[in-house]
Image (cartoon, rainbow, N blue to C red; front, side, top):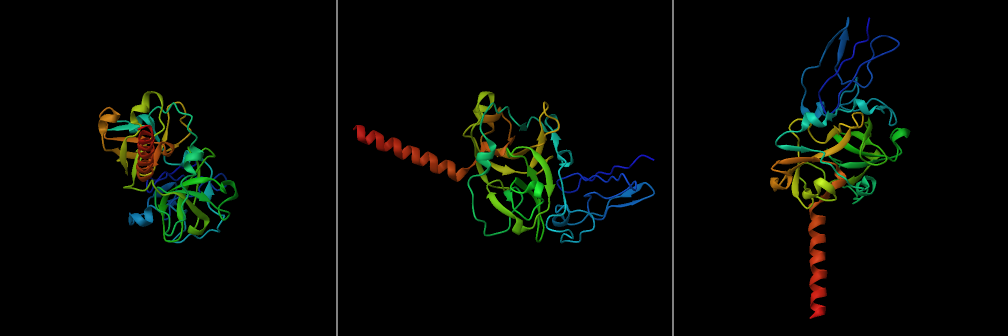
Length: 277
């Protein structure tokens, strides 16, 4: 009898149930999934705050595993989309970067000390209470529960999803919080064909299909889900009339930082002109 494979589209990630020893076994599936005689049924719909928590089977609000317990390191299990699936007349998807901008450096700044729990879209650093394989990695928060978060773990470059874990609030430290829904950002750092997007302003928004945040695979790298955020542009003309664009976080800057930099540059230029006079 072939081993059944069950997928659920609740929350931000797909879950898969397989077992080599017993034929059917839960490996990180959603709470409430039941299997009998090769059949499966999905649990009834629950409030978004619970469904989005996306915790392993057997949980009732709080995690039942140890602090270093549940995780997976299979990037193919991250819910991701192909480039062509998300492209439309309204949305630009992963424009050609043609840039040497190092994501790891951008993802590490600005560092802030949080006074509140992390929110969906925050970039966090995983602490010693997380699985050893992921300790020190950057990750993006995809769901928030009462005492823990769901984190999609990123590679050393801060671009590609490599796994998932469920750390407590105490086991993550906030790195960036300017990727939350509604945050104002400026696109910067593109070269080549996409450089017309530079200095475009917009707002972090939820993509109508891939949600927030999104993982997108480029055609030339189908097994590498890349972290992106949907930016609703103030001026769609900058993107050939498209209202929004899915951009990697290394090309996004907080709007406030951009304004301060422009202001500082203007003051320096004004000071230089006055000295010449």
